Image 1 (cartoon, helix red, strand yellow):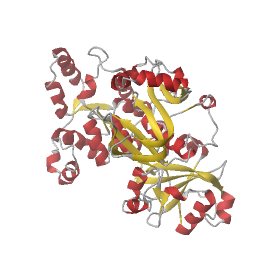
Image 2: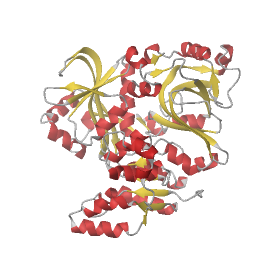
Image 3: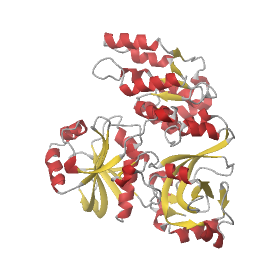
Image 4: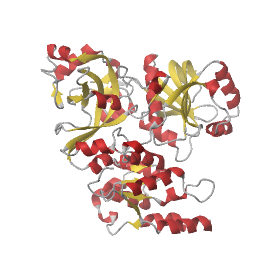
Length: 506
């Protein structure tokens, strides 16, 4: 067990205490979180504003349970009034979620008075994302994944892998299909039809054998029934995207899978249809990765489209980060951003990029499965290099040292944090993105480190070896720390490695 430099403080919204398993008992995942927090000697805190959730509770048994549960935790000192902080108010009031209670409960997170907030309130999560603190505001399942990282390695839980599965093998009686049967009267007929056609799916199975997440897709080459109309074009349709087991970035991974499938099939648009609900998690997920509402079909479903290749005139008016988000996997690589080569050891490269084709596969992967962690778009990296010149929007090129000695992968920087010597601070910054254990993090901070959060866009079609990099005068030697390269060197690298110009804006 690692010894933390200071006690972690976790703010618990009372709404998570009301998650029920058929009675008034808290969810199993929250129960495990509370056990882990006890083991690592962290502190659970309740904000006074959360008491309102209890006061409005009409069920006397639940209200009594909540009253009793709250008394077992420390109460947050709310003497610091966010309404007296002009900087915070300017940020907090900028948006649609201007609920004072939301602003109050997010204030301790924003001011670093607590390390994390655990809540199931979707409005709080949406505002946290807009304020740039979303990695520290966790759903219960996300919190379970983050806090498991604090356990000794012998206690760490390894998430189950995704599995490619014929639709015909899926159990139509699984609860994940209940809402689909309700919303689509013809769903069972459609399910049998695609089963008979031999359609494949990607599935995440929970520990109890039920389906926790499901992706079914189809390559189409036809017009779309919509208002306004969509002309004939080759597109990837996401027929089904359901995630009931959150916290392992499965939805993000499904988006990445859909993009990868599209690229392999020379497809530049992805779409899906959806009956949008209030506080809709699916809409929040897909809009984060560039899906935009286009219209509606005849049954009233909204149509969401994602363009993989940006309209250049539209993109030039956007900041680099927005291009990366809206048109992923396209990105800006013009002279308005710097380019850096980042050396990374093979063992960390394999963790960070589990989809890299030349890494050694695990036993699971030999059977058509792959591990979720590290297979996402948004990632974090920790380094002892000083990277004060790196800014959001800059390009990073990962150089895998030792075995390959080659540049393999490219990404876009979202944020940079330097001179960090506190493991808790790293966990706060990387919470939802990290693939590293707490033991590894505590080892790193024996010397000050830098952390950068980034979006991974591509692996190079042709990784560039060190001898090619030196002969091409892109590098003079194997990089020992983060190294900036010139615009001219980047252009050479781009040509030599086969980066597809259709996906770059410059």
